[in-house]
Image (cartoon, rainbow, N blue to C red; front, side):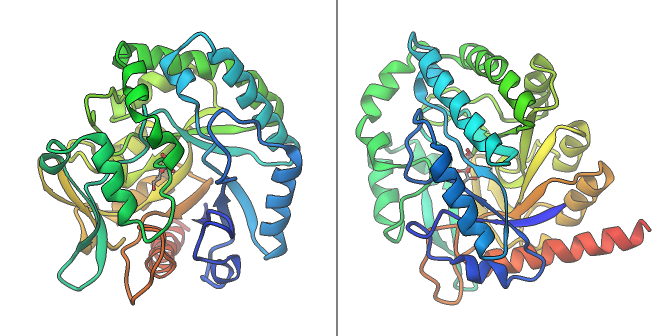
Length: 355
Ligand code: DNO
């Protein structure tokens, strides 16, 4: 296991590589070229520069989150092959620069969705929160405006303004795409990219849908154990793998995360570990990483990862906003550093117990 932190790049993140380097036990960074658009080819020069910057700070570039997928690929429109060709070129350039992990998602239109970016908890910290009954009352455009106005001036991943400008058009394009169609389009994409992944040893790690159910009537297919296994079996290649995100899967209490981890043995290439407080159907708050602060048992989760021999990058996920920090919601330094330290502590205990 390699403990990492997500970093958006110095033009987009309030956290610096120097700060990340000082979190005990964090040796890697998961990053991206945040100003590229889905469908664009990432040049080898830019990838090289990004890698040098991370390595220059004494850290390892452990993987990319995300290389986003153009909607044409998800919709399966006529021009999808052009965008898949571009994606393949990006993968080639990453491979040539010795980068071997790519996290992506296959959620239509939006990436993750929340109804509140700064819900106050009793201790005065603020967290991201979701309430389906609130989401049911708003239109996607209004949702974007409300999230954008509360993002502390940061561009939220998956909620880029350019994408939101086209929101009506995008919904229209998805009108004939149901779960099965979306699944077929995912498989088509994976089959086309597997040869380049094999050639350059690039592990693809799909991120689960967040929350783990359809939002705004759009299909969502990476939501539970059955769907994850279906997708892994459909393209039964070790390079077709998963980002095990405990918070996304954990938004649905029917998902037993340790059981899912065991079922996905060998195909989890990246782990996002965080806690959520389940508040009733379609309703949850994010929480500190500690088991006692939320509904998930972090010891059992780390134990399952340890038991299956997980050896990929792991990262604390969304943190609470604490100690007056102003940062991208979910991505401040302080609470994620606490999370990393806690997860490292659990891991050390598991290692020693199993010696
Ligand atoms: C949210 C993240 C997601 C994730 C993408 C992966 O904070 O977990 O935005 O990076 O879904 O493509």
